Image (cartoon, rainbow, N blue to C red; front, top):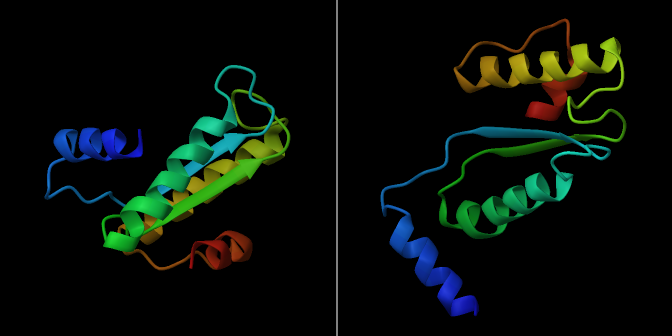
Length: 108
């Protein structure tokens, strides 16, 4: 079974493939898309792609509240957006924001 999985990945993934820097966000209480999907994807990238240098940066953030939208209230929604924008800014080489000390520290 494990060997068959490796064959499928090898056949369907070009040898030159490299995962871009990626941030996965999810909610523990999502009733439409179980957070296990994001967890499994992150685990696959960290355990299979990253050791071979194919996934240089894989980040994960899971809100314990909220639902399918990932946030229970506007404060949490703002945090997710700030986290996402900080990730994008750092990924394209912009300096970290001095206003978001928590997210900058988590991204490094």
